[in-house]
Length: 82
Ligand code: SF4
Image 1: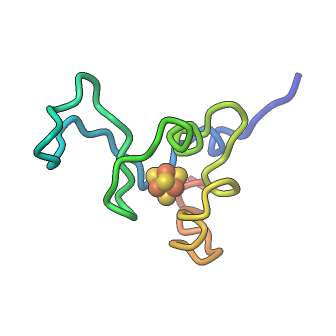
Image 2: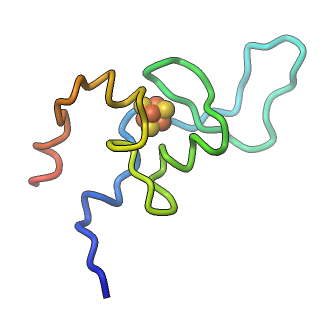
């Protein structure tokens, strides 16, 4: 059995879920969609898997947006050590 530290199960801190859209040709989503607060855009489902750290993916390792935004710094090290 492989034990995973609890902090690795946290989703990206820049992920939010939203149901509205500003696009006039689209209605509001039936289900809330993953929204990245770094780029202020909804993300594609495959990207949302990274945002949510699903399937052994990690936002810290697999998202270039997160890495560029944090510039290699671990902004949440304090949260992880709590
Ligand atoms: S796209 Fe990257 S930075 Fe944005 S919420 Fe997802 S994992 Fe985080």
